[in-house]
Amino acid sequence: MKTYPPLEKEPKKILVIAMQYLGDVLLTTPLFHSLRMAYPNAQLDVLVYSNTASILEGNQDINHIITTANRPKTADYIKLGQQIIRRYDLAVVTQTGDRPFLYGLLAAKMRVSVVPQKINKGWWKRFFVQRWIEFDNINTHTVLQHLKLLDLINVKSSYSVVAPQIKDSQSLEQQFNFLVDNVNFAVLHTHPQWTYKQWTVEGWLQVGRYLNGLGLKLVLSGGPFNDEINYVKNIQNQLPKDTINLAGKLSLAQLTYILSKAKLYIGPDTGITHLAAATGIPVIALYGPTNPVKWAPWPFGYAQNTNPFNKIGSQHVNNISFIQGKGECVPCYLEGCQKHQQSRSQCLDTLLSEEVKSAVNQMLKLL
Image 1: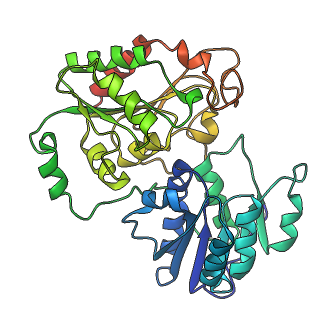
Image 2: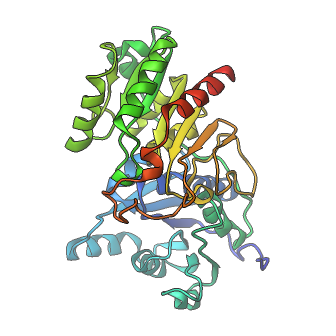
């Protein structure tokens, strides 16, 4: 890879554009932290979608979080333009889409960006930025993909994923007594956003009952949408009566605090699993068609410029026990066996609870 010199003039105002899903934005935080370490006196702003800004709550590396609608209208474009056009010394674009690229173009004269490979649509974008890297969607972990942007400005990488933080934990502890009663508990996140990432209800029930038999209190996490709340409620109704259901009741920062106190977390390929990994607690991640090289949870304390996980097979790195569904086609990179987000994935439907229980035993022995 070409070696770039440091920027001729240290930037006073930096805009990082990360208009992605929740987990993607969280995996961009090592980039934010690296920039903060390199430019401690700079104003570091981040542009994200409105529905992902909460993943950055309490992040001390960021001065301002600028939000935009997922589907902006004319008024939204005007408002955003007033906030960013030529207001920055450096724009860092972390994705290849047209809108993020255009925002970077408008925000600063000096731009570094990830761009599509020459065989893909949008390859021409490299001609409109001063320094660029090609996007790799298969062989490079998302954290490392973002950090490669630092090579373009000769900035040292920090590999720590920064989770959101709450200012007042006392009120949360008053609300949930199990946080202060020295209760050992495990958090189960049973409902990813898309069906093709779901494990089976029966699998969750078997593992939940097993954890309860080991003396762990069960805590169920979940998002605020009705289908997710109903899904989690159905599972709660079939687990021990003292199971705590937090679905739809917490901010991401509040959930982070609770996760940090757990003995164990089990969850599928979703942003909350990345969040749990960032707290440093033992995490069991259940994956099917998704490529773990690119999207496995980033292990806590992992600080190497190499992918933490291989493409195939269940693996263990630091605080992450990665369990991959079985099948010659795994990982297929597809959205379920029917190739759409609401279809099932056979590799997850056939994943046995015994394999998860074995991982539970192993992770609890390490405590």
